[in-house]
Image 1 (cartoon, rainbow, N blue to C red):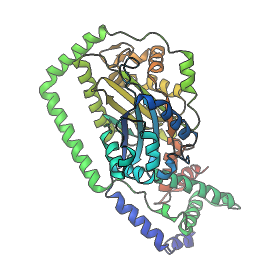
Image 2 (image 1 turned 30 degrees about the horizontal axis):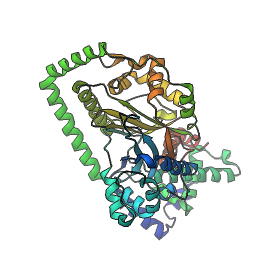
Image 3 (image 1 turned 90 degrees about the vertical axis):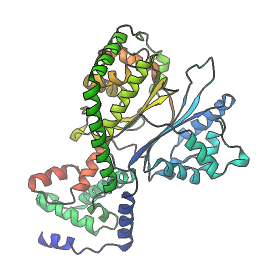
Image 4 (image 1 turned 180 degrees about the horizontal axis):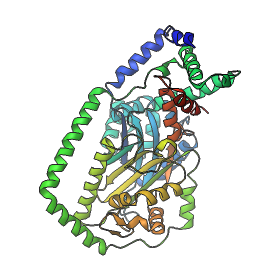
Length: 462
């Protein structure tokens, strides 16, 4: 086996592949990691039926349709959805919006520029049903880009399963796993080798493979500059938070008491959504290992509730961005194997001048298990965020009760879930657990391992 180790240091590298890796690393020092796109565009009432037909055609094959083939953006697009969101006074006053929500690698503007550059005709087919979209005579790339930018909304809170893990890395590491499994299938008697010997043989194979040798290098991560800025931001905000709490705790305590008094008079939604509605929502689920969830509801009236919702989401964003950013959502054991969180991305977006809140997520498994896990393991988190919504099961001191009333919470979601008309997932067969496992397979190609560690690593290939 010594010759194997020696050979690893002398395997030639293809110049082109090396240059591509260097470019990729350099790019990582400039780009931001994953970002959220939230487009909310008012629809022209008479054009909504035609828009729904376009979206229906798009849903038939989101990857390779003739309108907006999202496979063109497979190097940066994780998940995307279109839905139609009705305004607060619907149906008395028409106010429906076309909503496009996506999770992308790199800056939002870079993705929008790609969208405009590669799919102008597709954008026209969809957004021409929307108010004030540029007329045909003025549909330049700049005009389309400006229109999209004008209708972007920020996410008040945004969760990423693992910050810095791009869609290209996910797809490449799945290709690596498949390649290694194929190689193991070609070996005559792998059982005759020890785990450490077999691992070295696999590493040697990867080093000699033009399609796989890139895996011997660590994946591109967010730049050192970005990490430094994030650390400074964390320290600054955490310090500011300590100062605020130190000097305003009586005010905060009074605020909590006021909220508790309001909770005692809150009205709950007690009726169930119709079976027809629930069946319609379920019909759009379980076509892949992932599912999507979108829900929106009105906030309870009054400044206290709106400020409470804003404050809670600000704290959530701080936590999600700086603490729970590596496969761990608020310490929730909504976990698969290896303790990996089963949620890929989640958005919380305030709408209509803070009158309503929209939540959108991409997760593994069924909606039933998704809801039960949240209820059983982090009901306090659901209460803090969503108890500011009208009809939510009555809470106690903001954290308690509420979602613990499981059936009433499920009924509440049934009324507020939105139908997603188009949903795109580029790696439909890969759960968050699969993705994390593939990353560890790649990591196991580097460094030293004892026999026990090598055996555990090889099991990841089974």
